[in-house]
Structure formats: structure tokens, C-alpha cells
Amino acid sequence: MISSIAQLEEAALAELSAAGDADALEQWRIRYLGTHGRLKEAMTGLKDVPKAEKPAVGKRLNEVKATLEQAFAVRREAQAATSEGGPRIDVTEPGLPAGLGRRHVLSRTIDEIVEIFGRMGFSVAEGPEVEDEFHNFIALNIPPGHPARDPADNFYMGGTEEGSKLLLRSQTSTVQIRAMEKTAPPLKVVAVGRVYRPDTHDATHYSMFHQIEGLYVDRNVTMVDLKTTLFQFARAYFGPEAEVRMRPSFFPFTEPSAEVDMKMRIKGQWQWVELGGCGLVDPNVFRAVGYDPEEWSGFAFGLGIERIAMRRYGISDIRWLFENDARFLRQFG
Ligand code: DAH
Image (cartoon, protein in one colour):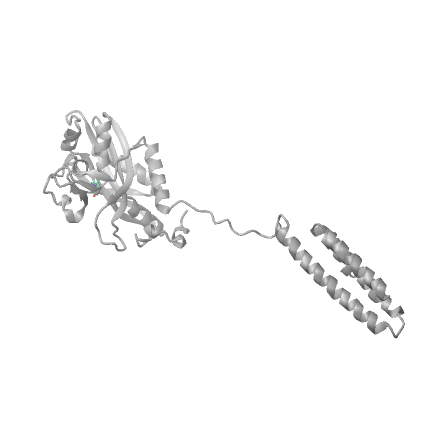
């Protein structure tokens, strides 16, 4: 009996080292250590062993069992580590969420607004964020000494000579000038972009924000065209009950000028929100770009993108828009 146990052990270890893959290892386990395996069989045979030999045979069987189990565990671990797929993957487990990114709430607002003006025939114009005084002020009828040019209200960047200093643009109205310089009238463009002002950051102020500028130049353009355009935009963007209100105001580059309010739904309530300015292009602006003010007329408007997005989505602090906290951004889009 003892010698047949030795044979069993020897054969088992030889076969174990020959088992080449996970399947072969499992076959081996069933054959030797399984409930109906050879070791179990030998243990069942113990009852026929003469009484005197039983303790020795039993002890030996237990030793072989421990040896085989340990050898098997070592082999299986080695096999799992080297096998190509590594640990088995259970394809029926529900997966982890794929963590998709999304458009920033401002990018989405900009896309939607530009799309609506696109449908109304406006093409998109662009201009640089680092501007010169000509495009940011002079051509827009803002002469030297005008309070809007105060160094405390602008990010001047260099240049000492009055008139040729560079600055981060304080308004997208600069793009009106750039578009007219490049294109002969008639003209119908919108421009969206960042503008910069040295404001102290708080819930409603930030040193950088976005504006959308509109410019339409043609023959016989009137305030009616302007109001109709803004009204159509408001209906398309804020819904069928939206309205537009203009309040008399002053801007150097328009005459007459007005403040624009739009009525939009905020948390279920229709409310007036001030969004920017507008007016008919001042003849001096046309002269600055070489358009004949006797022949051409036009309207312009400039609206704040953050104001639109914040009111529409109930965002009460502008700083959240620029902190890029995923927990905040995830709520939109
Ligand atoms: N540029 C003005 C601002 O930043 C907004 C503005 C007012 C733009 C009237 C216009 C306009 O085009 O006609 O405050």
C-alpha cells in the first residue's frame, strides 16, 4: 500500500508538471484532488488496510494530499500570471460607466446662438484678441481721452505712442471694423469671442468673458430691421413667448443707441434680462473703414454670452463657468 501511494504521488507530480495550460491544470485537479479523484479513492481504500498498518498509511496519504494540493496551488498561480489574458474576464459583469466628456455649457450656448443667426443669413467673422487702439477705439468713434480708454478699465499690453498701443480687446465691436475693412458692403456678420476687462472677480464680474456682436450693412437699414432681427433671435432661442425691449442709451459707435433686454423664462417665470447694447451704425464708423455713409446704413448689436447662459441655466456665479470643476460642468448638456 505504501509503495502504491508513492507511485500515485510520483505520477501525479509528473502529470502536473506536464499540464501546459489552464484547462489541463483543471483536468489534473479533477483527476487527482477531485471528489471522485485518485486520492479520494486511495483514502476510501484505507478501510481494507490491515489494522496495524492503518496509522502509517493514513499519515502517508495525508502527506501526499498536502503535497499535491500545494504543488497544484503553485502551478496554478504561475499559470495565471503567465497566461496571455491574465486573470479571466467575466464578460457578463455590468461594465464601469465610460466617463464621456461633454461640451462646456458656454461652448454649447455659443453654438446654439451662432446657429440661429446663421439661419437668419449672418456669416461668422473673427478678429484677434490682442488688438490695437485703432480697432478697439478710434475706428469705433471713441476718441483719445474718452473714459472708455482709461488704463484702469483696459488691459494695455505695450506700445507707448498714443494711437498705436496694443491691448486685450475690451469688446467684440472690434470685429465690426475688421469685417468692414475686408469686405465691401452689403455685409451681414456675427462675431463671438472673448473680451477682457480688469474687473475684480465676484459672482457677476470676471476679467474675461464672451460677447456676440452682430453687424448688418445695406441700403436703407432701420431700427425696425434691428428690432425684428433681435426679436426673431429671442423667439428662436428662448421660446415662442420671448420678447425684446429697447431702452434709449448711448454708445459712441451707434446713433441712435439702445440697451437690449430680452424676456426669457427663468425657473418657469418670464423675466426681463438686460443683455447688451445695439443701435444704427454711426456715420463716423463707416468713414473710418471707407464706406460711404450717404449710401450705406446698418445696425449693430453686442450681447453678453455669460449673461444669457447664466440666466438660462440658473447659474448664480460667473466664476463657476471658468473653474472647470467637473461636478459643476456635468450638470449641463
Ligand atoms: N460694445 C458694447 C459693450 O461692450 C456693446 C455694444 C453696444 C455693441 C452697442 C454694439 C452696439 O454693437 O451697437 O458694452
